[in-house]
Image (cartoon, rainbow, N blue to C red):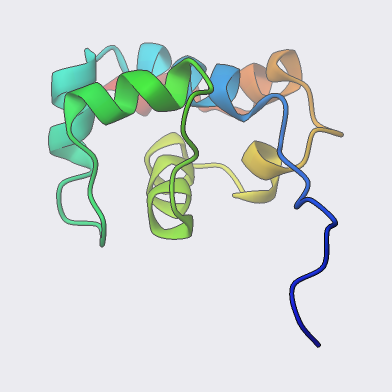
Length: 97
């Protein structure tokens, strides 16, 4: 089956969730890029900024690493059924230590 004209669904809240994770970790975009540096297709700080503005989407490996750093299930990042506020309540308080 070839590629159809249907567009792939885009998580509307992903950008805000990624920014929330970074701020809850207490790091800047440069440090976040360093934390993600071992993942395949690792982003630089400019790419982290584009993720947070919703201009680009991270690859699956980067999403998995964000979830690992925040100690949450990756589904919370991808599925818009889960709000940013809900995600905020799921991130452990000691994540930034």
